[in-house]
Length: 76
Image (cartoon, rainbow, N blue to C red):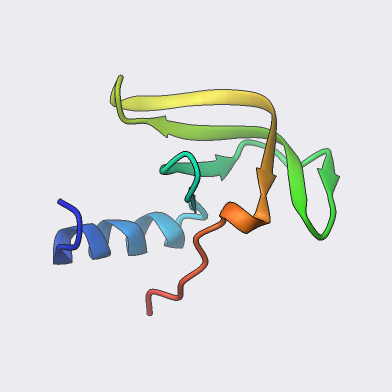
């Protein structure tokens, strides 16, 4: 329901629980553990992501989350 109040409220709730939206993959990610590598351009480690095709959470090890793909709008 793109562009709706429901989408806004869902995104706000996810961000409150430390989920981050990846604009390249158009998916929500959350750290599974502290990243192994963190620098100014990216962080790399194990993440949980929401697989919308299977409608469930999955784990991705060794994932590089480039900050240029981080959707960082403040939803307050």
